Amino acid sequence: MINETAYGLGSNRSCIRELFEYGRGRAAVVGDENVFDYSLGNPSIPAPPEVDQAIRDILQDTSSLAVHGYTSAVGDLATRQAIADDLNSRYDAGVRAQDLFIGCGAAPELVAVFRALAVPGAEILAVAPYFPEYKPFVEGAGATFKVVPPDVPGFQIRMEALEEALTANTVAIILNSPNNPAGTVYTRQTLKDLAALLERKSAEYGHPIYIVADEPYRELAYGVEVPFIPTIYRDTVVCYSYSKSLSLPGERIGYVYVPEKATDHDALYAAIAGASRAAGHVCAPSLWQKVIARCAGLRPDLQAYDRNRKTLYEGLVALGYEVAKPDGAFYLFVKAPGGDAEAFSEKAKQKDLLVVPGDGFGCPGYFRVCYCVSYEKIVRSLPVFGELV
Image 1 (spheres, rainbow, N blue to C red):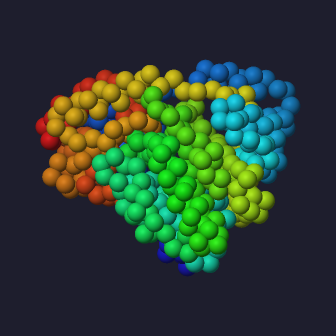
Image 2 (image 1 turned 45 degrees about the vertical axis):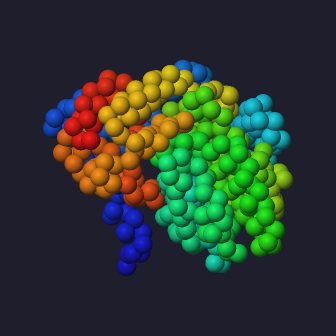
C-alpha cells in the first residue's frame, strides 16, 4: 500500500529537475561546454573565503561533541543571537534571538510555517510568477493553494486581483522578493499598498492574514532597495536560507523569523516548532550553525552575477526578446516568441539550450533563464538564442 500523492510527487520530478538531468546526460555526450544549461539556480560563485576559514577553525576543536553534538531543537542560542544582531544592524527591526528558529534551509521552513497556519479550510495565496514547489508544500500541509494572476510585464502585485482572491479563509500570502523566476523586486510602495490591504481585510475577517516572506535572494540585488517586510507589515513570517547569499545550497541552513509584534507570536512560534518536530526537522546541522554564527554578517560579491545579468539581458533585448527587468536574484523571465513557452523550450533543447517554461511558475508564455553560469557560456549561447527568435 503506497500513498498515491506521495508516489506522484516522487515519481514525477519538477520540470526544472528534469531539464537539469537531461543536461547532465547531454554533457556526457557532447561535452559540458556545449550544453547551455540555464535550468537550475545553483550558485556559480564560491562561498566567501571567511566561510571556508570558519569551517577550518571550528574543526580544530578537539572535542567532537562540541562540533558535532546536538544543539537546542530551535537552534543554537549564539547562532540566533548573531543573526538577530545582523538584522538589527541593517534594519533596526527589534529582532530577538528567541524570535528565530534555525531551519534546514528554506524548503522545510516554509513547510513548517504552512503546517502551522493550516487550520481547517485554510487558504494560502501565492502571487504569480511563483516557485513551483509552493503548491505541493501548501497542499501537503493540508491547506488550499490559490494563485493571484501575474502583473505583466512589471511583475509587481495587482492589488485588485489579490483582493478578489482573498476570502475569510485566507490565512497567508506568500511573497518571494527578489523573485524566482522573474528577478524583480517588490518596491516599498507595492509592499505598503499590500500592507494596507491586508490590514483592512484582516480587520474585516477578524483574524490576521500573514505574509510568508520567502527570502533566499534578499542579498542578491543590483542597486535597488529590498525592503525588510516585517518593518512594513507586522504580521510577517520570514523564511531565509543562506543557500544563495553564501553559496551554500547543499548545506541546507537558514532560519524562520517570527516578529515579536506579530499577532499570536508565542502560539505561532510554538506551532512552527511543533510542525518542524512532526516532520523530523529539528536541530539543524550543528557545524553549519556554528559557521553561520561567525559569518552572519557576510554579503556576497555580486560582480560576476551582475556582469552576467547585464550581458544576457542586453543581448536578449537586442535580439528582439521581451524581458522583465531583472533587479535581483539570478534569473531572467523572458516572453516566449510565439507565446508557447513549452514549445519554445522543446525547440531550444534540440540546440542544447535549456530554459524552463513559465507554465509551472503560474505564468504561461514566459520562460526562465538562470544566469548563475560562466560568463563565457552566456556569450556563446547568445547566437543560439538568435537562431531561435
